[in-house]
Amino acid sequence: MKILDYLNVSNLSNLEADSGFIFQRQVIDEILRQKPTWEVYFIAPKNPLPEEPRLHHIPLEYGQNKYEVRFNFPWFLLKEKLSRFLQDIDLIYVNQSEQTANFRALVSTIQPDREIPIVSYIHYFPIDPPHIHFDNSPNEYNHASNGEIIKPKLRFDGTLNTHGLAKVILSRQIEALQLSKQGLTCSQYGIDLIRNSIQKIMSDFTAPIAAISPPVSLKEAEVGKNIPKSNDNSIVFNHRLYSHYGPKEFFDFLDWYHANRKKDFQVIITDPTHGRSGERNRLDTSVDVTREQILTRKYVTLKHAESREEYYATIGRCKLAVAPFKPSALWSMSVVDCMAAGTPVLAPNYACFPEILGGESRLLVKSREDLADKLDDLFENPANYTEAREYCIMRANQFSAENTARRFVQIFEKVCNPKK
Image 1 (tube, rainbow, N blue to C red):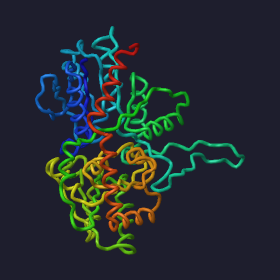
Image 2 (cartoon, helix red, strand yellow):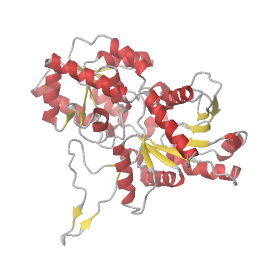
Image 3 (cartoon, one colour):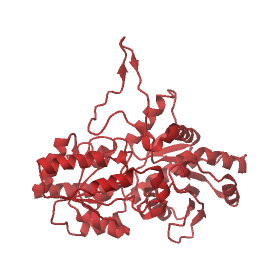
Image 4 (tube, rainbow, N blue to C red):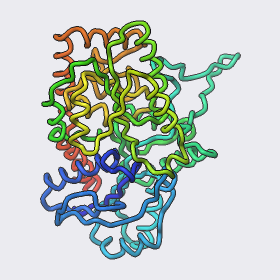
């Protein structure tokens, strides 16, 4: 099988901290290992993968901001590049789902007599769920005075809604699912959020969506798992500092925790958005503002990793981690990274986190007080801490690159051979 794979990029200025790049690097390597006769034609801004004769890099300039990567489509340049080998392609895998319709249209003009199947992956969905933070029992519907149920309006992600663009991004993702033989996203929670949101505006929406979780590199994580833990009570905030990742809410909680519960702890911020371009900062100043505000706290230290090895050493050295306060999280690679590095993670009991940690896990928290109690317990009870650490390592093993790639292989073979 020959696959045309289009990379999604969110942090081109720092690919080592770019979730789309890390995802694809691990999956492509493992797919080619599992399927010795397969080849991948990889559209990416730069060649981010090691030399491999069955991996063909197709260079393409993406742009530097969140709208360019979603709306920029160099039709004539891509037509010239793809026309050289498109007759050999068996499947197109589009990782920036807003571009799926463009690929379908372009490929149809190059080869109008042949429909190449497309698989689209939705990594990021521009809708916020109807609840906020620890409220995991949302009132899904409003009731009119006469008892009639009125479905609520969609809540768009403000970071993608400059001048109303989130609605257009949603419409392009709907197009992607309708034009694809198979839609993919990160979790069952993601499937439910996508389906329920789209059905509020298209009640007959039935496009197929499956869940394949992003992988974790267990080999890379060994560095963190084997490094000695720091002696202080350290908590790692291993997430982007965008406002919708909940840094304000989390550090408001920590201020309360510091004032009312415990003072001898440190917080390490890895800041994966380090090094982002000036163009991206211009469109969203919240990251720099948030970083400046957080670093005024005496218990906070910023630790930027220059390599994947240093990254895993940083998170592995910390005693605990806390998931982002992000009710719209379809997945969190940063959470699974911490788990694989042997750092127990406490997470809100909403979004994708019950799927990552297990729905009955004691590491899920339901309130501010519950989070404080569990932090105290893991800081002060060695037996419970060891149990949580071993449990997180065990859970992370389920999300290995090998398992993720195997699931992709199953989907790709099914799409290309539906009768088989």
